[in-house]
Picture: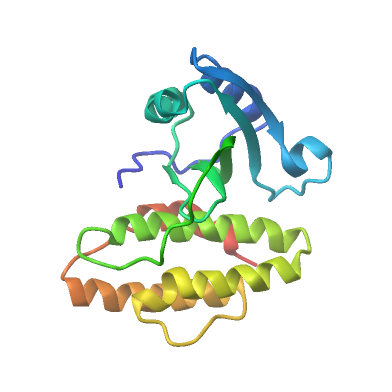
Amino acid sequence: MDLGAGVGRPDVTDLAERLIASVGAHRAVRSIRLGGSRAEGRATDKSDWDFLVEANDFPAVAEALPTLLAPLEPLVQQWDRLSPEWCWMLVLRGPTKADLIFTEEPHVKEPPWEPSHENLEAIEAHFWDWMLWLRSKEAGGKAQLVEGELDKLFNHLLAPLGATRRPSSVHGAIATYRASRRRAEQRFGVVVNHALEDAVAHAFEP
């Protein structure tokens, strides 16, 4: 996970325009538009960005996404393991979270992580993306949704890492993850690159 120098705060005022232009340039993208709270005028400054995408050739677009989005210099990008539609998730400098939701492409939810020497970096990326999304829901006052997601987070990611208690808050989830990650690093003899954490950690400060 090489984040390079991408830890500064970007100007996100033109994020929608830039992302739509980047992805919409692909010949197989039929339409892409802003959705969710940003489109409906109810976003907070911490809200994520949802983009609804329709494609004539989903595999071709999916393969091209890292190249199409390279000009935005994402800190990390990955498929959402738990979305009911295929969803490409980005963490950008700021940090800012954005999702490309392919509304016509059903996705089967994947099973809980099975941590190994090979996938701790992928788990790291998934965790911090998830935390940024939960932070936005917490800021929006969606307490019930946050509670449900903490259950899901525990079952899908934290418990497989060895955590024994479900966290009761976003900050509690971060503390639990850090402790579980440290034990997993020791168990598998690998050191996870913490550059992504360093880039997003200030977003969770009081």
